[in-house]
Image 1 (cartoon, helix red, strand yellow):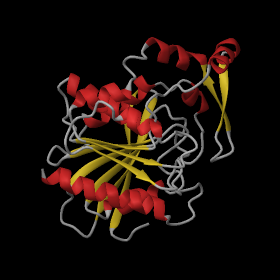
Image 2 (cartoon, helix red, strand yellow; image 1 turned 30 degrees about the vertical axis):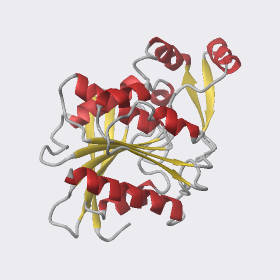
Image 3 (cartoon, helix red, strand yellow; image 1 turned 90 degrees about the vertical axis):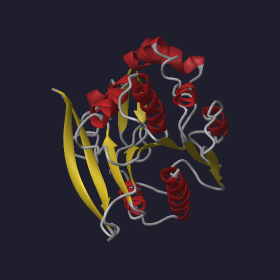
Image 4 (cartoon, helix red, strand yellow; image 1 turned 135 degrees about the vertical axis):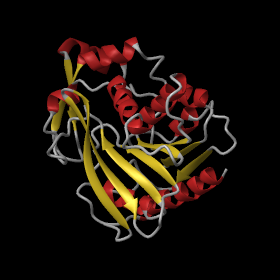
Length: 283
């Protein structure tokens, strides 16, 4: 871990049976941070996956307070690096994740004295977009910007055959190639998405927030096509918004699980992010 950051771990009880776990990365070489960033991992991801702690430490060293979370329904509980809550994973919806962010944003854990940004990888970027708009619609915490990393413009990217099979079977198998585990996703997740699809539109949410957005995507992302970036940000109009493509980078920007050290793609992401944040904070 970067010697210029410190880490504090904690928990927030969102409901009686849903616990949000977090790690706070604080810069130690500076008397105060420039802003608070909440990092949201993607589908099948978790805050302690592979290079994410290293990544968050690098960002924090740039004078940012980074709070990385495990959403309550992500399937990773007290084990922190294993899916020890598979039943929760099987029923995780975007509504659960937005509820988690609302509870966190309105808790004493998040300071009210500095700018606040949401940073999400893949599905986490969708959660960031929806949460920023949810806060705006409900006149709650002001979000100063959203950063998406390899984020799709649409969560449900399955063909009709795959959807029919999911409905008929009642669940679908999810293979986590990063950990080798096979998890199940209940058909209720699909039903929830179909029922609330208009509310789960990240492009619409980003456009409605009216805040700056930084979208970063790898040109060789095998999980989410780089074309998604244009669609995701099609309605974003804030002048400080930017789209950045990293040539050659994949879905996790060179990072793997278990962590195998620094990677130039991820370091490029940190540089782009830090430069953009510095301008956003000074506006």
